[in-house]
Amino acid sequence: MKTLFYPEAEEKVSLLEKKINYSFSDRRIAADAITHSSFHNEHKQETESNERLEFLGDSVLSLITCEYLFSHIHENEGVLTKLKAALVCEDSLYNFAKTVGLGECLLFGKGEKAAGTERRSTLADAVEAVLGAVYLDGGTENVKKIILPYLISCVNESELLHDWKTMLQEIVQKNKGELLSYEIVEESGPAHDKMFVCQVKINSNIIAKGEGHSKKTAEQAAAKSALALMGIK
Image (tube, rainbow, N blue to C red):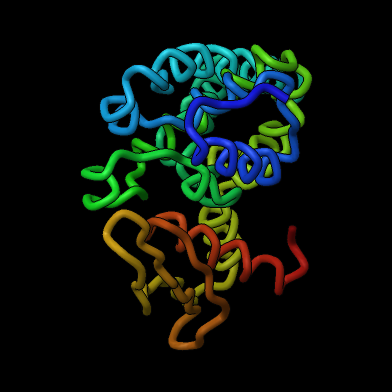
């Protein structure tokens, strides 16, 4: 095993390997992937920041995403383009980072630590850097093992393919006089990671609830839950 220049990186790389279920042959590449520019600026002779790997990972992620959509989603080019944009955007990558706990693996400088290490852009960039590192170390197939399950789950939940609110509206409209409405009843979490809870009503009766990181997503989740109760999935 290659020894890294800075001891803290050894611990962080080991944690990263557990988080993404992948063992690096070249742990130096892994260390670069988790090194924020603020840490690099404090250890210039010992480190490389993850910015170059981020550049590579962006392209690798784009190719894997496009290949999956082309092979499995039989929609026109416009829908595929919108789906790709939704999958590789900052919010999507941030959600993946939060899911695997990537923030715990990153190396930050003292100033950045004080300012907060859970910024959306920082975590999203780190995802791309890690994917770039895995690509260099183990090839495309290993990157797919890490990211494809997440991408597939996002596609399955996508409003572009499943507009749950419209589906529910069409069902409710069949019964004249029925009024469908949505209400955000709870809001929690820090500004960078808000969570909303929405309830959907038919007339004054609460049918179901749903939650999401935006009001729109919470409404869709509530509609999906209502449809599930009706036996529609």
